[in-house]
Image (cartoon, rainbow, N blue to C red; front, side, top):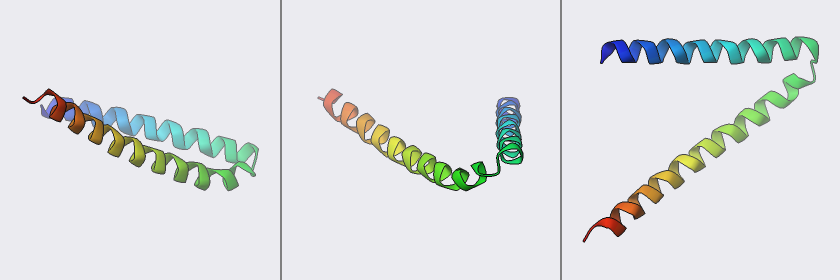
Length: 68
């Protein structure tokens, strides 16, 4: 179990570093992109929260409809 968590953490860290590197390079080449990054991140966080709550509600409804 601990080994799986370590692999997951390493994989997540690698993806985060690649994303930060991509945004850094884009901002270095086109500085106007730095203006767009915060709103785009805000939209992504909002959509993730909306999707998570919607999926939770759908799973709850599915469980209720399956119960006798």
